[in-house]
Image (cartoon, rainbow, N blue to C red):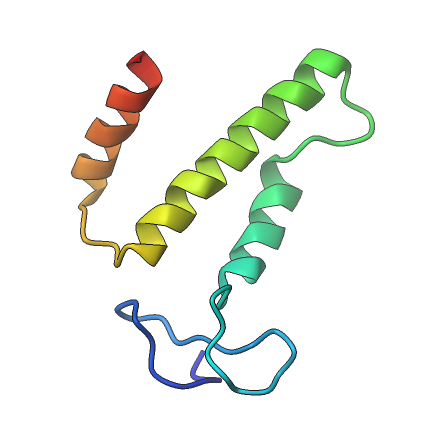
Length: 90
């Protein structure tokens, strides 16, 4: 994955999706986002409840993961689970 320059995020190298090799704020997250939404997002065949439930789950989960990545992935899986439980229970 070493397409671009150094990264602010441990273990991840970023490149501009346009291929310029410059560091991009989006980095490689757009690849994760595409896969995530294809796997978990709503489809045209879903009824209203399923489509909106999947959209809510997908966008909120992706945002949670994106924020963790952008903040340097400092928290462990157990810490992230605890944070998510606090958020969900509010």
